[in-house]
Image (cartoon, rainbow, N blue to C red; front, side):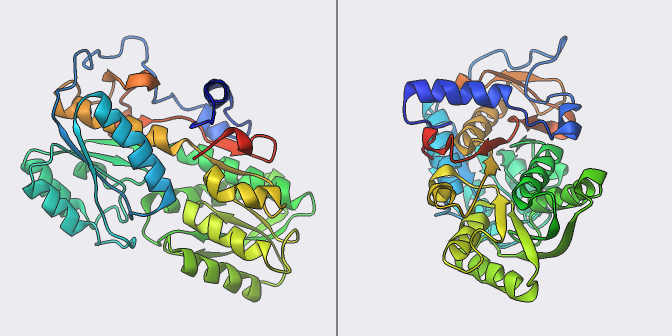
Length: 356
């Protein structure tokens, strides 16, 4: 994590390594995708080529989450292996908004396109054309169909995210339980939909029998729409006890609405957010806890993966290993997936240790 001091960083990294969330029962039984297994291929031995053009294409630019992942993570990595970094993309998240940017990057001879997909299918045609033209494609945060890219950098297992979100809202609401709702990003977001389905599976467990999911709404990763959707949820469900928003834009907008309303302290909120977005709301009691991985590490890992692909050090085949700079060695798992790690929980006791 981007802690404010070197000591803080060391503590944060140690916590992130050790803190695997007791609730991630499903995730903890998976074979970790992020570290080399005994006997794994050593295809990653070698050096990344200098001068590679690496472009990041987030769901939307001017989003604090993607600013951290791209400009504070991906850019750092690309500069380390002496490549040429750029970020481009739409100002609003929509299924087809990224297509024209992919086409332009392909025409510019970009070596690596790192993209967070607004829709798993809508950009596939453009990505395939870019790959045919010679670009390597790495997805991060939100995947396409596996056939459309070379490697997907998964920020955390879907099971782990779902389990952590349900555990946090359950703890915040308390033993009495009650009605809860989900404020998501776009209706087509691959990662959001996977998490939501697994949250439903998690809610079916006996320990969450008193929690009832009554609605799922979409803020389209737009601050004002997410704010309005929060307001709408509370008007539609007067007995609502909690909201989960597994999107950085959504959870911050929901917190802003709750903090200035009669529902502060009465309706609980959790989700996936950054410390800088959520600090004020944690300190004023609007939010007890929320979770996230380190977005800068996600972008950093995505850049190194793209560099390894474009340098011929890996191909995206299961079992291949490569070194991702300061993050160390990683292994490509099934379906060309690389797992960054487990989500981390932020509370009033630790939030000031982080600055991103």
